[in-house]
Image 1: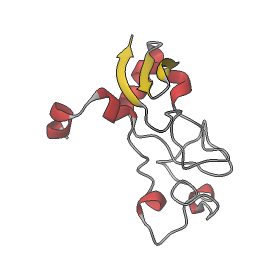
Image 2: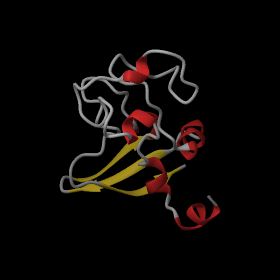
Image 3: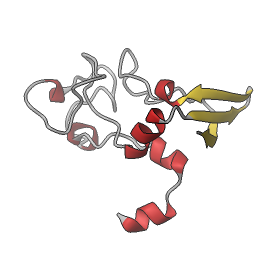
Image 4: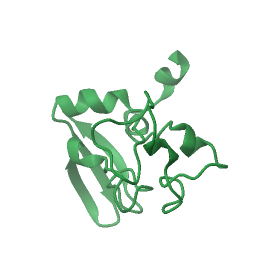
Length: 118
């Protein structure tokens, strides 16, 4: 929405969680919400789920449209945490849903995004 766009941050946009209906519905199993519970979205045709960059554990997509544009521009995400500052290429910032489908990014505990460099 326009209201959200006018008050949101770049970091917040990059850190959005998936909008997969199974992730949002706590009565359904979801490996992203509860690893090991299953992923009903893996079967059938779903127009809102991944066709590239998915795994047997999860096919949910990241909803950030900004991430796609920033990746095309070779952006770097700068993180600051207890161990200091580090820079991560945006193309390596989001994780594929593998053994830990609940972990969306490479952010470590205590880290936050301080800048995105183009």
